[in-house]
Image (tube, rainbow, N blue to C red; front, side, top):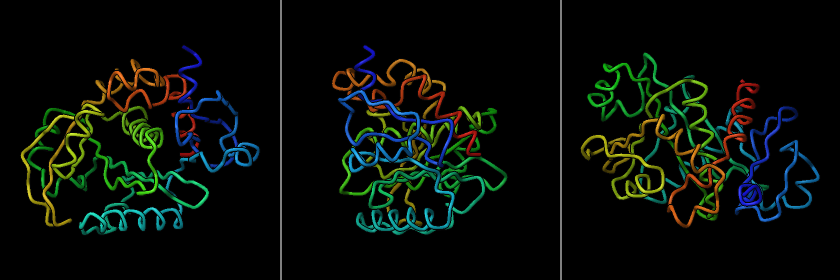
Length: 258
C-alpha cells in the first residue's frame, strides 16, 4: 500500500526556495522522495516530467498566468478580463514546467467586495451567507492544451482547497462553469448544481453555478488522497490528490510562504 501511495507522491519541503510542491507529470512509478522541491539533482534527472507549483505572487508570474488564461479562454471563444485576479482577497496558484507556466487557478475569498460569482449569482451566494457559511470560489482555471496530466490538475485543485478550507476556514466552495463542463466537476470532484443556468455577458457564454461542501471534500481526501490504485475504480480525481500527511506538509509550506 505504501508503494502504491508513493506513485502519486508530491515532493514538499519546509525550507528553501518558494516552490510549494513538485509533482510528476504522470503517477510516479519509481518512488522518489526528496526533501527539497527545488532540488537541482531532481531537475537534472527528470525535470522535463515534473511540475513545480508556486504562488503566482510576482508580476512576472501574474502576467504569465494571465497570458495562459487569455489564450485558453480565447481558444474556446470566451472573452476574459484581468480585474478579478488583482484583488488582495485572491490567491493565484501556478504550475510551471521548464518552459513556463502551464496551469493556474485562483482562490477567491469572500469579503466586503464580494466574489466574482456575485455578478450572476449574488442571490444564491447570499442565501449561504445568511446561513453563516464562509464562502470561497475557484476562478480562472486554465491548463495548457499540450499538458494532459491528472496529477497536475489534482495538485492545482488540492492546493487551492488547502488555501480555502485549512488556512482560511471556508465551509463552501463555489465555481462558475460552462454548463457543458459541469458533468466533469460533478463526476470527478463531487460538485453539485447550485442554481439555474444563466447567461454571463462577461465571457459571452452561458454559466452554471456549482457548489461543494468543503467538509465533504475533506472526507474524500482522507478516504482517497494518495490512493492512485483506486483511480480506475472510482472515476474520481481524488485518488490523484495528496495523501493526508503530504496535505499537512503542504499546508505548513503555504503558511510559511505567507
